[in-house]
Image (cartoon, rainbow, N blue to C red; front, side, top):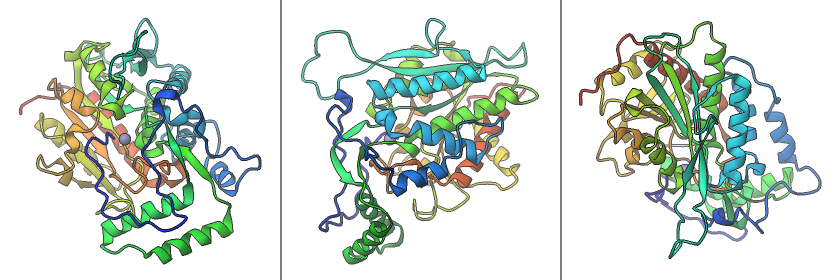
Amino acid sequence: MNRRLAWTILAVVAIPGCARSSADTARRDGGAGAVQSGTAAAPSTLDALSTDLAPGSRTSPAITEADLRTRVFIFADDSMLGRNAPGEGDRKAADYLAGELKRLGLEPAGENGTYFQEVPMPRVGAASPAPGPVPTGRNVVAVLRGSDPALRGQYVAIGAHKDHEGISYRVVDHDSARAVALARMRLEITGRGPSPQEIRATIDSIRRLRPARRDSVFNGADDDGSGSMAMLEIAEAMVNAPTRPRRSVLFVWHTGEEDGLVGSGYFTSHPTVPRDSIVAQVNLDMIGRGGADDTPGGGPDYLMVVGHRRLSTELGDLVDSVNARQAAPLRFDLSWDDPNHPQQIYGRSDHASYARYRIPVVFFFTGLHADYHEVTDEPQYLDYPHYTRIVKYIHDVVRAIGDRPARLRVNR
Ligand SMILES: [Zn+2]
């Protein structure tokens, strides 16, 4: 999720020893000189815990909680360097995705027979362009060919963003930074946050369990590891299903979202399939949280839905009817879809790049939580049962758009 509109900080609790993490990033130098977390010689308790939570390296055909855990722990590992774009982290993320797509047998749909589309990246903050070639990030693009010869020339696009914010120049104590961020969110949700003494007590209790862990990597487990790994799980389920969707499914992992929707802007202006053959775009950006402690109004069934009725009434109806058919339907929060909502979320993630060409879009999201754009956005804090239900539902939405006899009508 793009932070163009600054996250509203209602209160910053400053107490000794409780450093707040910083948004200062070292994206452009690939983090040279920055300290990574988890580099201590002896494995910390938290490392052991992380290993317990990530059950294995193999994934199964079905969309499962275990598979999503495995994938998010890989994709949001410190070794991905915060998936900075352009840079080494963006390349590593692209390589993991391409490896999985090849293993699953999806068709490459990027440039020159590869899964990659090179995207020129703006040099943020540069007074004048530096000499030499323009740095590029990588969109990753793949197709699952549809089963109906009459409809497989049309595409249901599903997208997420693979990039995140790189590495911070400022190293923080992870537990302290998180305790303060959680306190801030509790204040926003309940109107009453813990006192500095209560935060101190929380940190002291954590300290009895494990030593301080220095952290500087923006792992982006939820933003947008959750959407990126959901797409791989959906691809794996569709590849292994008895029948494929009638229309083709176009999977696009965008780069440079955090720099202003750069990858989706480039893909939609340089599409690798005919733009008018894309019947809809389903965007997933931050779908792994949304609990009662994460966001106002959150809970185990919570899902924010944005944009689904803005261009096509039929898409809006489909999004609702597929949810009604779920074994346990999700509870939609439509409040952020209001054109007057102060966060203006409709313009802040990659679906907006598709909507500007009047491609019907639906954007799924579980809210801006305490770890949003902090180094504490790590895999162990996702709500995997909730996230898994959301991914299964989104799979069914994509499948339903793909199997409809008639193309979705754009009527608004
Ligand atoms: Zn973001």
